[in-house]
Length: 135
Ligand SMILES: [Zn+2]
Image (tube, rainbow, N blue to C red; front, side):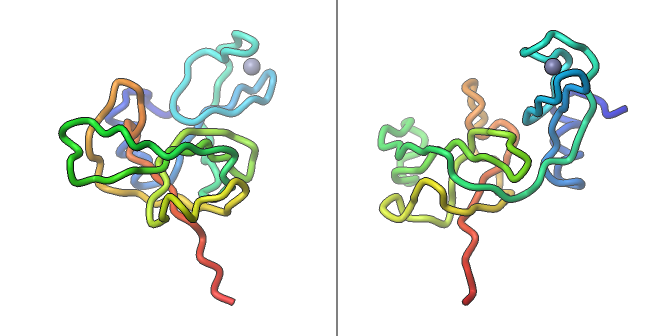
């Protein structure tokens, strides 16, 4: 049984990769800890390891920056669909805003956590970067 405090969850992710929750009743998967399935209200939730790769489902380039991010530049927020179908919102790094495309393959890239946001933008500290094809 995985403890569900955010801090311990973060530490576990450093060690095990991206963790999620799966409802064992309806099969829906979620990023991060859950106690109750929002789809079917089941409390039969198990902790799962999410695949570290996926594709960009949709994205937006954010030009409006909080004051403390003066040197940050525009950044890309995307909905990433992981290989198991779990969707999550994450920042895309190592990618110019002109180069980002829907359907682009991305992989998990842990980065230093900058600003914790009440909107959960980088709350869990995960970001994604394009998978560079070495052909
Ligand atoms: Zn469910």
